[in-house]
Length: 340
Image (tube, rainbow, N blue to C red):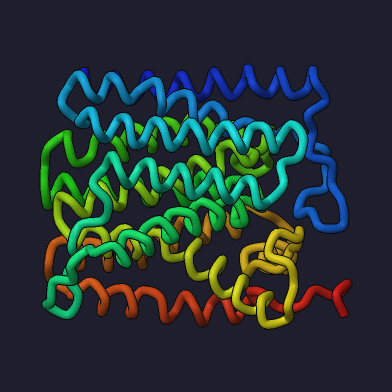
């Protein structure tokens, strides 16, 4: 029955994405290419709403099988719905960045309140107590992950592949380290919801995710990493390792753009994955490369950390160093030709 539930969730997401594509075409909700785009053909947008609806509808069912507690459903559901709503409104018009950011912090605070915040973490063998300063950093972490996911959703399939491989790694870790549906049910539901959407978004994409979907995904992945930390503090470091490609590329790009005093929300194509897609002349090889890095480099390291064989901070550094080199190699954050 559990397997059938997740198969049904993937099917529901697939069908909802098809309906959203018809809706976007009928309303001319198209992402039209411009000089800052990584695509060349007008493409419907907003398909990520299928991920949102599938995940939110599945939360009460996870509650019924004791895969989630009420406070987790309220935290995940309330924060996710709020972020998806502001993203949906921005997809259909324009919401000023300051108002979006305010909503993002409100959603992160709501979720942390219901889910108990970030628990104490172990680093270099020492437990670090999660005081008020740490909880503030946890909120900042969630808002950054939410926005970086939006920044990284710039070529076909990459955001979906990142979410699927991260969730698959988290499910595998939980099944080996804490094998109950309460630990792996929510990431498995998110995996299923993304799978149905990715059938339409894998290169060449027939619909884009949109801000509603990308922001929702970033927030949910961050919250699930915090939920995992309550099961085992080492799981949190494992989640950060699994998300390494997106975290490193987005953070290095942001820092280099800040150094040139450029606006954070100004559209650009200077992420490493965007430079790579232009270098190879296609989105698919880059999207597949992200999946391969996640499965064959980050997942084994995440497992070693999550199962207690390697200290979390040490594992994180080992995982991130080659990712930083790779992002630098593909010019993450470097000035684009039109910038001079």
